[in-house]
Length: 120
Image: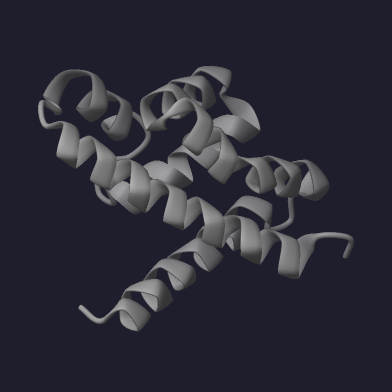
């Protein structure tokens, strides 16, 4: 798949996720703040630790984790990613690939949240 097409798909999926997270939510600014820090959080802590933290917090953070899960594992839902990372993943290259993809997706979520919803 050409790079541009891949970026476009990720950007569209991120837009859908951000719109779904924010929607009519009264905590729009809080969601944007969380999304702004998500790429750095994944990069500094790793995908496994980020997913465990977000899922453990629940609420808004859990919704963000669910959006990440839905991107990486569309049909499985909320706990699929954490379960896969902790029990089924045995290849470090696959972990690095998933983490890179998660960072790319998080960057797009951040860009869209800031561009469309920040200070609106």
